[in-house]
Each structure stands twice: as C-alpha cells, then as structure tokens.
Image (cartoon, rainbow, N blue to C red; front, top):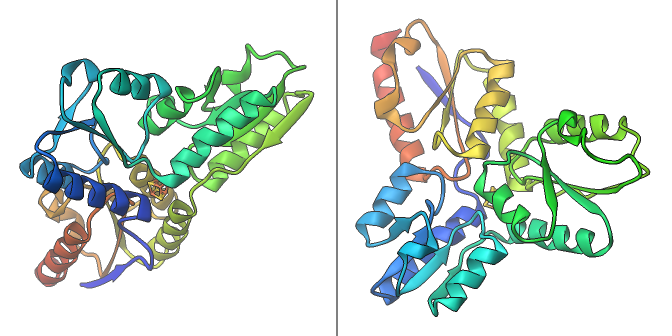
Length: 281
Ligand code: SF4
C-alpha cells in the first residue's frame, strides 16, 4: 500500500520546548513535578515518567522540589500557591498560550467582557480563565444568553480550534447585537498549517490516520476535520491500536499527527503500515 504523510504534522515548537525543558530539569534536579500531563500524549508522558517526572493533580500534594508548568499554562492562583510553598518553578507554558493570557488581561483592563471561544474543560482554556478576572468561555452563541446586549465584548480563541469554528462562532455572536465587539485572533499558526495539510491529504487517499493522544485538542480537531472530507478517517494513538481490518481493500493511506505526537510514533506507524498493507489488499 502506498503511504503518504502530511506535509506538516507532529511536534510543534511549543511541545518541543516543553519536553526539552522537562528533560533538562530532570537532569539537574532530584525532584520534579508537573501539574497534569505535560502534553496530551501518553507515550511522551510515560517516557518522562520513567526519567523521574512525577505528574500530580494538585499543588497540595507537592511539598518540595521543582514544579514544571506544562505547555497549556497554569492559573494565577496555582502560580501563587506554588510560590507561597517556596517551590521552584520551571515554566514550559507555550509562548502562544502566554500571549492569549496576556491579551485576556489587557482586554479586561480596557473594560471588555472577555470571551474565549473554546472548550471549557481544556487545561489551556482553564488557565486563561484563571489568568484574568472574569473571563467567560463560549462554545456557541447559546452560551451568551445571560450577557447584556450593551456589553463590550473582547473575543479571543483557544489556540488549537479551527479557523472555521472560530469564524462561525464569532459570526453568530455578532448577530446577537452587542454594542461593541473586539476580536483578536489567537489561533496558533502551527495548528492551522497542520489542519490545512491534513485536509489536503485526506482528500487524496482511501483511508486516513490521525495519530495522537485521545485527549489532545489539536489532534481531535484534525480528526474531526479529516472525517468531514474523508469518512474513512481514524484517530488512534499508535500502531498497536489499529484494527487491521480497516486496511482491507484500500490502495493509499494518509497519515497525519497532532502537535503533541512524537516523530518515533509517526515513523513506527508508517513503517508498519507499509510492511503490512501488501498482505491486506
Ligand atoms: S499547538 Fe501551538 S499553541 Fe499549542 S503548544 Fe504548539 S505552538 Fe503552542
């Protein structure tokens, strides 16, 4: 079987930097903790755990050592608590996520009701909400029902959403008739270029594979977009998860991967696919 890999896929600079900082910190410090998984990829989290990184849910469980802030960032309250406890901080928050937090604070200072378009349960969104006073999360226009129409809205977006989703949500918000709306595009270009490359590729192949963590927002978005253009799209974490039956009768396969999927997972998947497919077709 022919296997094509998306022109742009896999690790983004934000994730690369977080992993490099984690490795460097683990080499220098005896006790290193991370609040929640450093990135949404089990293979990477397991590797770093073997190297000594301890992933915990709350600061209350950490009593000494160094706390690594993951690429999705942390709330101001979390950062204050870490400092109050006298723990060292290594900040691996992606610069683009930091930019969203800074914009949220600035809009708030300028008197805007800050609205972030995205998933309220995603750690990046929770960190933005916890970085500025009174930030509201909006997944769709129905979430604006309790807003007053004379409010000034400052709209930003979760970095890993798609431009189409952001545009559709903003367009629906505009129809609600708010007196002033300021929109700042906080989408991540790395995510956008991966989405464009994935959509282009999935249209050319019989079956499309999107590799990445099941909780990774940017990977889920890639899979959702590809599925719209090619229903034979499958989101999985690695080769072991593939139900080989889906290869039956397929001539060309496409492969892409989320921003938190390491090269070795992509290479391993492609190698197995190339070797396995001739027997399955
Ligand atoms: S996907 Fe974009 S925003 Fe998220 S960590 Fe990577 S570079 Fe940063």
